[in-house]
Length: 309
Length: 279
Image (cartoon, rainbow over all chains, first blue to last red; front, side, top):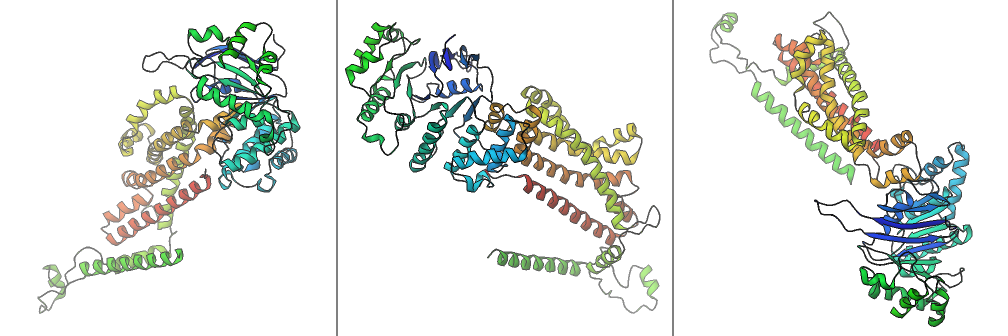
């Protein structure tokens, strides 16, 4: 049993055959782990199964093989220990903003009084800057505000882990920026463990402690684990001035554009060990990064990986 | 702007009513006979002469019957002579009872069918076959097995209003947004809370649509059912007045059926508005 907070081992997903034709596994042999208080982003092209992985972690979907453990227990079915923020906010339109959050809070603490629930919810709604809108219906809110309610709802149940499925994907750039800042502040304050899907490389660099890079499906793998070595107190305004920023960014974009296709097939297995994907730190100096990142038990493969870059 | 439009529409509506009444009056006006000379009017009438009646009542005659019945809607002078209010109350009572019974069955069963794709498929052939049967076709079976005309009437209302409610409830429940169900799942909401706080409100607009359709059909059917079983009710009233050849009363009753049906529909429309949510 590993000592990590969340461990994913040999996860695989094959969707049922369509019209009698068997499907290839979307992903297989997915291994990674998340420690308590870590913010992990997963980046990859559409169709590599990111959402499926998140749904498996949420307990909403079942993997075809492999397992996930959280806090020493196998993830089986949904649980209040894991809060989910859905891409489409998923607020109940017939409930007020407060009602939506209260519904979640009441589910977690059924014996709380109405008063206590309302106070608790209001606190979290104020945290996301919606203290003025608690009695509105979701339909009266903008897209960004709705997503904030979704975030407040997920935080309000104080889950051990937060799962975010591309929460800002449907928002315009300006709104996205503000909510990213808020999320950053909240996470820095609460040390919440977060697993987040995103398509936005900048968003991932800003928020994450480490980024899982996924190769393309079918047979998608975790290709690399990129550690963000910039200090944790980064801000959206200041991050561009950090010398590491563009190194990391270039590394990520380079992966997505050029290298994400090259991890499937027997050839790839020669230089890539899916059980132990290489950890890289592109933010630090190039040569140094490779040495630091080299796991003790897989030096050769690690070197090949670096050479391949 | 909007009120101006309403005003204009009301004016046109009134105009149309006036034209309709005018045409009706013209078409049914008694004509003076050519043969005026005959001394004995009674004799003339016997010969089919004299003041010639078209047979169909004039608006004035119908108006008189409106005034007579509406001025005292709740009198009761024995089984064949009751006020229109009492007759409508009987019909509404039957509809309410049959409809209520149908709701009690259709909502839970529809809920169950909607939740389970297996049951949905299993129930489907029965629903598809039973749905198109005219409710009145059940009447002989109902009369034979229930042995009571009053209960048979209620049964017919029950059987005709159950299908739209059942189908709409099942459809509404089965098509609740996946996201909302997932939210409830991740929050480990217990099944009862999920049913009442998530699925029911999410499906409520569809369910209410089904109930509105059912009520419309029930009100259509009760008139025909009461014509068959007799005794009381607005349908029986129509049939009774037809037997009396009192056409003004028949026309009056027909208008009342329309007005009550409109109010029933308005009521369900209002309920529908209450549960409709904007996304």
